[in-house]
Length: 511
Image (cartoon, one colour):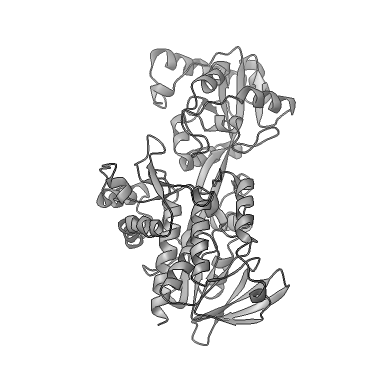
């Protein structure tokens, strides 16, 4: 299974795709002339390339990695409302409901025209992808979310984002799109009037620079999530405590190239999530999964409970609350009875579709033993509250009171402090306690460039830069400060949608 949360396996899938992606003869050329250059071969870049080629444009697709897919190969499904899949489920939500709710949830910090276009076009986006051999099923991820998440089904042995990438790459090949792997774009070429007329790239295989002359350039190189300098400067976050969980060489290249040509820099956000790390804790392992559970209690460095742990069901908000704590971390406290619960009855909160709700963590005790043997810095065990407080470095009196108060709330069936849903309230048996350290992570950064409804990049005077387009995670004002999970797949859906429409608009403009 390949998902956004399984990086190693995703890399393997990407490497498989890379076999069919490279044209050695092409990379050896010093100068290339084409109609459109697409920078980045994730879902937005592939969608742009396919759509532009279908409209008759000659397309060159650049990718800095030795494989296609980018972050998209780890994603799982796309947002849409009023799709045919939803109609067959009799889902009641309308586009109007989604649009109104989206503006409210994002505090009106988005471009309403851009967002409206996407929401109202999301069903047609699913239809277009379906016509390109991509199939879906609608899934409600959590009780907090609308049933708008279109999980991607199998294509040629791959599922989820990897399936979409493989399908679009096949169509790109059939349409004659020239894909150049291990060939990062280095700079945009502008004419004397400031219009973008090409790209300078570098073939890492041939160790040669390549000038690509074009009538339009579409930026689809993804986010800046692995550029610590930009995280600190643009997002004002500590990159040592606000970290990319899927490192895939996304350093903001497209954004920086556009800024160098006078583009307007827009606000940024992140697709955040709760998580953990440490010795003996594997990424997306069963022990890792315990960090996502709402039935635990969360304790900060003062030994105090600080939030309704139900927030774990909304992964980006959970990342925010953990980051706001001193030291940018917290501890999730649970006991042996909850370990038994997760083994026998399954988890309350899933980790995407890798670990669905109700999955039984049958290897959890084995993983706990391994972490303790490894003397994990992210997981601790104790036989008393006092001992646990010492191990995680918090005041004993505060931790003892927090657990006592919580157990009393469980007894009466009401959390009078944070109003946690009673179905997740389970008392803590203090005879055998565990603590797992919580941190803040993100799947991807979001934003950097301001575009108009045609996905043309805007300059500092809010005018379009001729010949330059931006798509996907490079586009600002699509989400507010926080990527909300009221509807999963919003970013992934927007990537394909924006790529398609940038391809359409660019192809039309160069005729």
